[in-house]
Image (cartoon, rainbow, N blue to C red; front, side, top):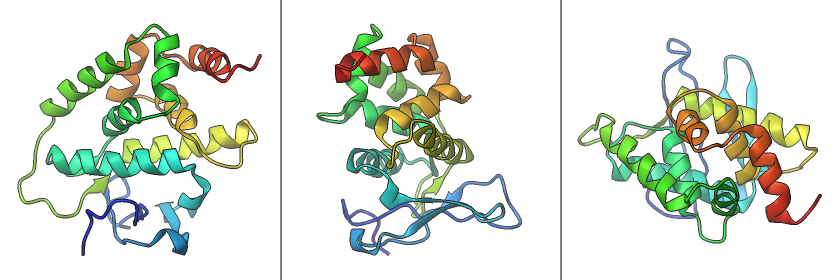
Length: 193
């Protein structure tokens, strides 16, 4: 199975019944035209449609997988997503961080330092999705619904990480990223009041 073709896959996550908290493998590669479901938790029946994400959000998750592979990590974590979002050309996350007074390059560097400290796995073929990233995706979907947005976007992913716990949330919060601050900065970046 080829996992390296850019732009041609969607995350497909399954929950092994015997390991509900374990990282889930990316168990299928699908073309964009298939618009398949991303199963975030089969035990509870929750699902998130990857085609309900903006192109930038899809690209950020794809880049997160590539980063996990590059760093030889066994699973994709929210820190990979932070790094992918800060590096995204023409994305909205970097301008939001700048409005908060955080240099996106410094955020990326801090994420890289933390990613380098994580354990590496040699010969890893299947990269799982961590429970923490699954939680981020679930909260991002709920956030999009709260805002009555049809699609989950990169700003929903950023808000979901800050609303959560863990290393990515800690990193962002240390830089002054709170849900209220992000919403305020988002309004300024978008030019709405």
